[in-house]
Length: 218
Ligand code: DX5
Ligand code: ZN
Image (cartoon, rainbow, N blue to C red; front, side, top):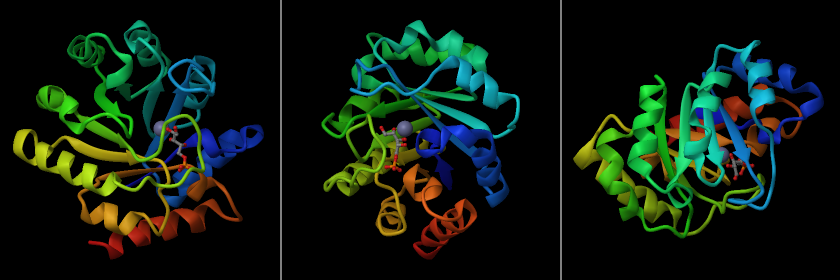
């Protein structure tokens, strides 16, 4: 499944581009919240999510690249997030945060940066709906898929298979028609993609090509 990331949208026509992604077949939307502390960049936050919630019934997957995300879980749930993904590196009590996301009635995801050992995830897998393995250093779109990511994906796939087979495995960063096939074969369920969906002439064509790359690998 391809999950378009709005970080690469043209924000002057954001609603229109989200509609185009939905018309192309996207069921989930990736929403990158950055605080300028956990990552160098600052993206957008609550008001934007509230606005687009009014025009879309897609699954809103909020990727929180912020320190101490536990401070804001309730707020993002209230803005219209359907799923909330926090970073293992940013959170003091991961289990408490995951439990709170569930108590708010939302799906809980846990993410790791490229330098974080995959074993960090293991204790939390029984309570997770999604694991996000970053395939670039978080913070910016348009980066290159990091070497070594496939091995990490396979290791996480193995853990999920052993502990909680219905937990989804997602990757984010450098996803395109060239990087999808091997990652799909390594066990990825959801491909977050920003620039490969929203840059260029046609969102519909981009989305179709990414979906085809995914199918061909199966
Ligand atoms: C990066 C963000 C990504 C970003 C991916 O920190 O988490 O979601 O939008 O962009 P691309 O697909 O261009 O690598
Ligand atoms: Zn992201």
